[in-house]
Length: 477
Image 1: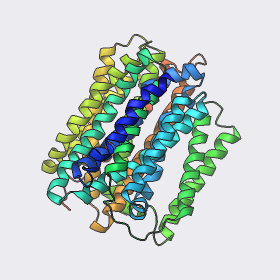
Image 2: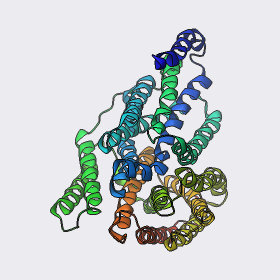
Image 3: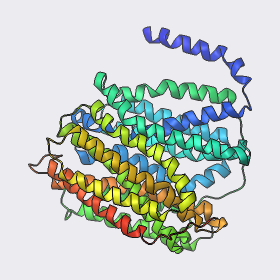
Image 4: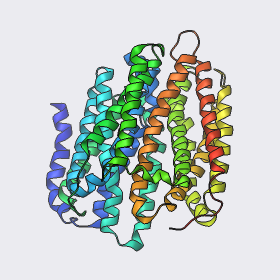
């Protein structure tokens, strides 16, 4: 009864506000406010669980190998949905996409709040990720539909700022909540915002995108989904069982076979969901690998460091979130200026400098102990994020600039998929390395954390070497 009276004012406000909100129909500002709010929630959910993972491990009695799926499954599903974004935008209206995405996101958030075991919680994250994966392509499509060319840059910049701010506050926000409440509160606080955004969208949002006949290759979708799921299941199981176990190597081989079949199919069918011919351009291929390594380094560290800080250093979730906050802020700010520097000097020296910073300061994370100070971790992680911000946007833009105009959209889809999937696989593999290398039979040990970051250092050096092959002058498309 008490909950009813709490919700009653909100219900009355929505009903009385229907007439007011209808006045904003077809207003570009109102439409973008609704769309950007949904975008903020989607991106926030990508990082909001990082500081909660150690708490969930203890509460649900699960290992780090199992818990990391809460983050990995999110980025992987977004990567799987990226190839079908063109089909989504061409086939369905903006209102249909908005409500389908927000409904899926609200179902996932509700399941997360009600979760009584890990399987229900993971299912909730799956629905959240589906909602985010459907929603994120809609942001750019709406901007290009409702704004003239001279205003698109400003709105894309605002969208990018939100995309950088949301993951920056996610770990600290969840860490603060965990100081006072159960981890399920992370999901509960999102539900009213989702409900308000959906209510506003019902009255205000109009169909602004254009539809055209299109076709989706279902076998390709099934092959990529089954292949990645089997491959990741095998890698994750290896952290619990031995690599000689048939379930481990059988899953890995089956997944790899499905992925190879998917790749071959993309070259054989007339309209592939991912046109992999973009990799015939060597510069695009190089920059895609660099961007994938950079993004995977960011996501994996934001998963491993909170586990280390809370399990070994005995920091609170809020403290571990604050350690990650300066680096995330630097990422958002420097990414903007890196774009301006790219317009001036190109991507080569930005990528080389960023890769040097990433490799150097990732190596500094291979010497961690239980006595490592908060100041040391904050400085090193912030420096790593500075390097990542110098790499991400410049190398992605440099690779796309090498493609002809008809392949730009394919290059964007392929790049988005490889980054998200690479981050999911990279995080899963580093968690396996951390678990297998830990001493004393525990799920998390200092040696395991250091070994995981040593492997990450090697991948950063690979990114540095590849950066040397980026042309020294930028190419304007």
